[in-house]
Image (cartoon, rainbow, N blue to C red; front, side, top):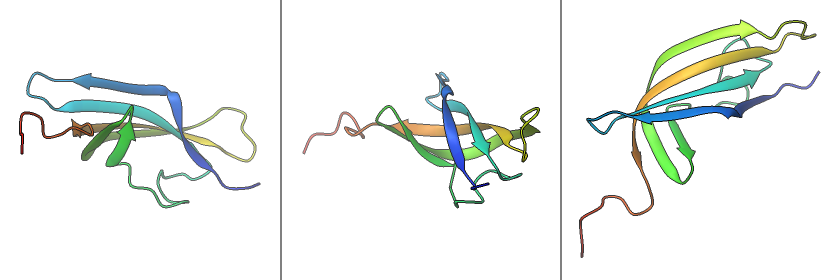
Length: 94
């Protein structure tokens, strides 16, 4: 079986806190037991909807998808991040 890894787009959830930080949650589906191994990926820097999120992972939980042969894993990842669109920083004119 060929190795693969992708973010399940239907699971992406972004919520903003009053202090401006964003909580970004998503699920990675992978043939690897640990996310980001093959191919190598950095899940602390992602772009969703034209917004660049950078932060740190606060939670990872993994499980095998039932009846998958060979085993395929789901990794639920939560990231605490700042987000910035193309026009950041705002309010600065040159």
